[in-house]
Image (cartoon, rainbow, N blue to C red; front, side, top):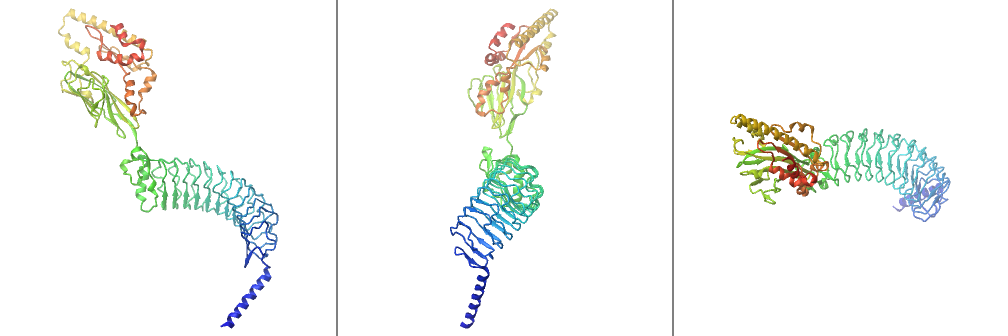
Length: 619
């Protein structure tokens, strides 16, 4: 057995000696095996001069070269892989790599390079892999990669580059993988990638991109990986991903995207992973994911989702695809509305996804008549999301909320059903006359309804029912003074008729004069709408709308006010009046409740034209 073993060892020794004779001796600072010279981490400051010319793989990483001069690798024409990473290189001469015609991989990552000569890579026509990441490069010459027609992988990540020349890839038609992460670019030339139709993977994350020009990815029909996360994108063009039918992974997380167009993903039928988390999305179109039939992973958490009716479509799609998707929805929670905060979108009942809306009161203004002793019902039918609660302001100033009156000065006969917003008055008297305001309030605003009650003589009030409801105002009989007088006319003699006519004409004149004085005196009132003018002194009534200033009218719109300021808002509401002069055959007078309303509110707005002074002038 020893004979054959000894023979084999002799043969191997002869092969080794022949190899050494052919390749030359290995430098003392390196370790050589085959055609590989390993000179890593030797503290070298210069390239060893005696590297065998047969070497195809030269490893020089982890040294301290600082500078690579011209023809630094003279005679090493067979080198295919040159590794110079982590070698503290600060600059490279224009012809440092001259003669390396067989070079396919050049690794210069993690050095201190700030610039590169435009022609430094000239002659490297077989170069396929170029690694320049983690340097201090701030600028790339437009023709830096000219002649690198075989280049497939280019990594320039983690530098300080703030712009990219649009011509950078004009001569790199075979580029497949481009890494440009964590630089400082804010925009991309629209034609930058138009000459690299073979591109498979594009890494642009960690920059300061605020927008992408429409068409920047046109022609990238083989692109599979597009990484745009950790930028500052605020929006995306509607057609930005058109034509990217082979895309499999799209990462858009950690941007400032507030919305996405409904058809932005339409062409991505092969997309498997989509990352949208950590943006500022509040809603998404309901059909935005419909074309993503191959999607396997969708991450949308850490967005300020507003869980309302605008997420109905998305929620339905998630329900339909939850079994085939890794949704990563454990943190996809609602931010608002408040009552749904921190609730998971995936588990939220569909009926909770409703849109908030300010209150609206059905039939905002109603007037009814009633007789002494009648029971009166005021309805305040309000809608809104969240469901509004209703308060009532009575003519005397009492505010009723829920089943409790806050003051109870004049509302002893009032009962309130808050569930339906109904106010019931039992056995009304003339003290209950006036304007009742209902306020429907929710988080979105306030809506005001006006209900007016007038007590008439029992002989002329409606006898159809003792209960009078504001929802049945059309069935209420509202006799005018003229109608009352007509019912008495048959009992009057001729002289009485003449006296009546004279008195009526006098009262009408007083009515006209009072309207004129009020119109002239109220310097702060707004112009009366033209369509109301024709109603003056109609059938024995004189009605003048005494609006207050433009500032007060603007304050009437309480939709955006908080419920906490509700009581204060009533002070503005109370300043809305109907200045009414009632003509009577025996004497002219202003209704008691009208005088009361004018005294409590209008005087503060028109102090020089106090209603009492106007009344004295008229009467």
